[in-house]
Image (tube, rainbow, N blue to C red; front, side):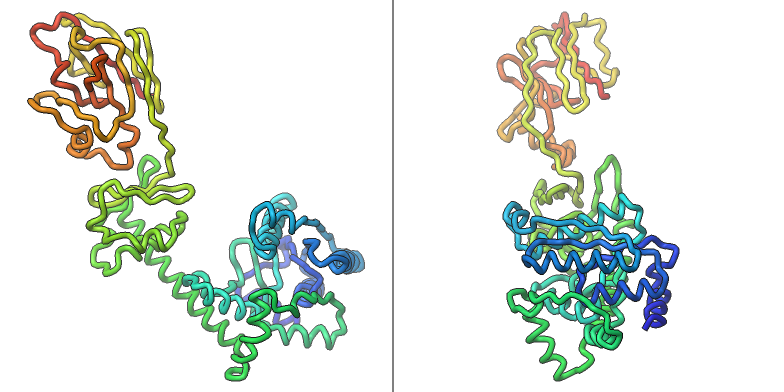
Length: 442
């Protein structure tokens, strides 16, 4: 048994005897079996036991068993008790889901604080069969259908080459004690229903059902890895990352029959879900400025593609300028005001706008634009919507929410900052003095 165990570890490059390992142990047959294999193999390991306080006195006896097992074999033992029911109530989640979160959060803390190389769990091929069936019932994607992998980051499952019956037989023949969890006999949980009623029916058709599911799991993982490599190549070839923004051009979807599906698989690593992306109307007809959000990201439809950036919460901005002595600051831009003689006007100066002082009555206002805003741009006879001006200037939809306007006391728009000025306030032959608006970017 030990030689098979070590061969599987070496063939799959899971860990070595030089690594500092942490074994997650419940006291049940699977984790106790793994404990003894690690012990016999001379591996450098400690254990971590979670007391979820869900089974009354049995939870106490499980903890005592694990402590005794470690003490008698001189193995370091980490124990932590959780008020799982209270935590589930607070998070409004099921106890099994909360227990899993508490368990893996703690393992992560232990790994970092104690410098463990890997965390080992005792999942085996029968667990994998059950997990794949559960994920099929939950309509998961390929990442769910591939089941349990023997290595995922620092989490390692070195028993996936064995099934539950092989482990049980070995423990019985070796007369190794372990704790029984009576909750495993109940049909209260979906996993137990599948274990007790569904898998036995499969075994009537194929006795080696765990091996079959393991093989399917392997094929699906190979396909998933191939797909991810192809997606990465498409992404790296087409997408440009600049100023913290991913620019996703429509060329990414050339010769792709289902562009929405491709977009979803490219973006799911950013937290976008299938329903939000796959249900989009055809990308080619999607309205300019349409936005989809995740908790951390926003995807905006632009001309000829999409912009992907960290989600921004942009509050409406308004600042009243009572005199040339006032200063406005927003998002790292400082706006100052100055009265200059006509002879000092130099339109070649960068980031300075000039207006006829007599036509620029205070108080002024600097604010974010609104949908109904109109102005008479320099050189035009009539008024034009600010939204159309931004469209003509090819200002990205994702950047429009923060667009600032300069407005005079009569509520006339003097400028769409930083460089679109009004015809009404322009410098003319009659101008004696000018109002200079200086924009300084930090």
